Image 1 (cartoon, helix red, strand yellow):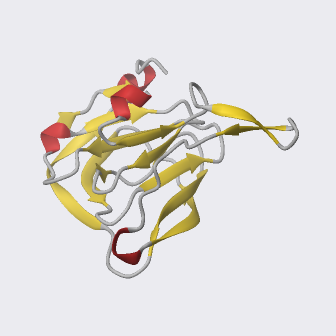
Image 2: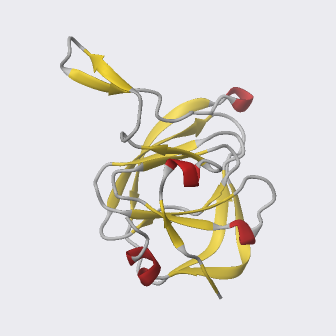
Length: 170
């Protein structure tokens, strides 16, 4: 069994897979007579392929127990999929580049809880990996005709270890 090293989630490290949704470093400006700060254009929502439309959902994720085994991946070939946590509980992300799934390209990231992600169309990712408690996420993805989820079993299981998470510099 292979072990994945867990990295800290940053915009630069995650760029090949989509967008990190966070306020740090984001373009912002006051609106509503100065009573509100707008953090603008945080992710590229890409759901229009084949007549798709945006959906807004809430996903409730159950916490995972260590060690976490990664035995499958999924992708959404017709649109992006954004996850914005509704709490500050950290969670993990496992991704691989779009295209043919190559398990040697798997990468794992640790969030600081309040960071969201937007998986680009076709990027392979593991389903939600909540850690400390039941966690809710606002999810923006594609609705419309046609199947938009491919799932593949990995030829070999990969493992995420608590020790790697605790040293991920979050």
